[in-house]
Image (tube, rainbow, N blue to C red; front, side, top):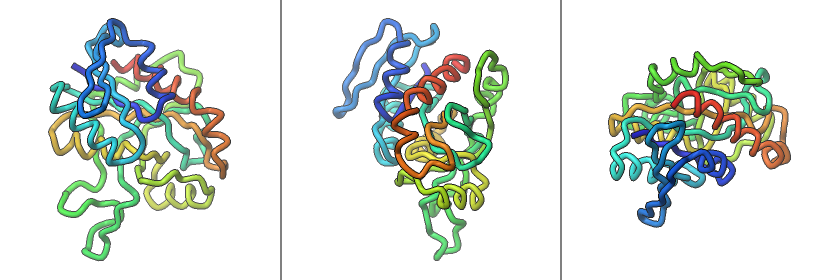
Length: 224
């Protein structure tokens, strides 16, 4: 069985409407939806926003449903001028940019006592994204950043992109990647751009989040 996670309501709505024979299971107040997505048995869950919510949800998804892989489908902010609203980033690896244990000799973004700095997506799942056709936006493979902040300032976006050689930033992927790595479950992160590197407000996000969520779902359908 495949586990699918989305963070916000727009992402959840885009995915849930595609699930056939849907059933709801509530665990610790979190709704998990089982059914068939693209003729495959799946469990979908909306994690909520932020790393802790994402980690709790991913752990329950793996432990309670025994999924063989986890795919996160959602939206992100661009850190690269090449990326426009609606484009999609496939996460080659994921780094938590807000982790700072450099005082103890760790690299910026590295979680203490973990050997990984960047959590790597499953290579076979990444390969599936290379066969995607009939998609009107760019699809780029690269690094995704995660932190417990909504990054909106242009200069901060540019600096994060340079410091970490990353394409986009979100608030959940790194936590899901860490949980999957610790629990030995393969994962893939799919993020569609909801706000460009030049936008310094939440205007683009509010306007384009539904478009980005739909585009991320289109990629998801071709991967599963």
